[in-house]
Length: 246
Length: 233
Image (cartoon, chains in turn brown, green):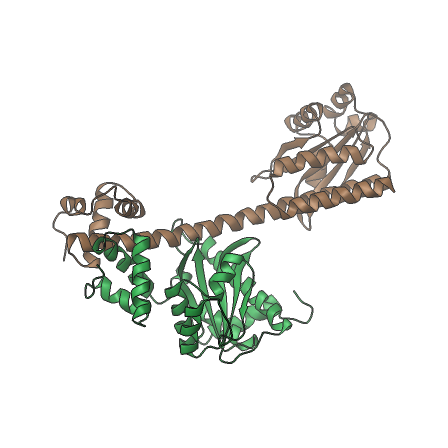
């Protein structure tokens, strides 16, 4: 019962972070720590693929774990890489079979003190975005129950990351829209100011703004902004143009 | 969304059908709202910060008139929906006591008796509001509210998808297919800021006040100011 309650608390905690703003790396560190608390593992680590599809270390429950994850990446072999590439969970003792499979990684991991390893792909439908890795100083592999728990945690982490990516995309686009719309407003306002100050039409004012911007290698929106702020005098615009067309 | 309610794909199809009648996408979206939501008019407004950036689509002239009122006054159920990020309903504009008295006046004059504002939200980012109007009093049914949320969702995602493809710093071309008179409002504000020696924000307030006090649409007054026929100093 205690374990069920712990699990439930973990899931609720993580579900909450999916709703609020949060930092992915911080989230994954906490996930790695929780894994170690919840199942029979000594250390946990998480790697995510970058835009080029290369796995990168992101978070772990300890420094020792971080170093071994880096080792795996450096030597381009190990259970995490396999889980990521194949999209299938890996559960293995670090025995002679493991030496055959990962000739550089397995002996090194044993040297560091680990006896068994589990690596779960972080995937949603067809997309594998990384791997959640658990190392143990005991040779016993994870029980079926534990495997289910960590798979569930890996799934939550995956959804959280994909959700965060969607959110930041949406926020980026929404703010781009806002900026673009506002800069249009600014340009139109500047036209009015320049037209009024120089006693010209709106169209001529626009020409003046554009010529000035070109002559000073400035963005039109910046020139407009400066006119509105008062840091650029509207009268300056008529000095730099060479006989504007009327 | 709701099991028996409007599916986003179905709504998108209705919009597409309207587009085939040779209408711009956003007006089509507004017309699609009148097709399925039990309302007689719809308008889409983009809002940023506390500035209404403009109406980007309407179903018809009546909706256009009401959007104009809301834009001129800067108050109404749609702006409230944007600010509060939840739907805001006014099922009988004849009835209400204290909320948006000037908006009510203007909307009733245009023939609208009920108005419902739905924020355009994608996750928690709000970019404006979808405004639904009726020529008679009455609340939306629960089903209609649910369907309207679907429509607002489709509208928000559509707008952002278009914007995502726009060149950096530029407004997506699909959002430009609106009447160009908004630019005149900002040009007028520029002129007025010089004439009255005030900030552009205050100039816009002066413009609004003038338009409202003379019961003229803000875009008309703005055109007169921008083209030099009227001074507000």
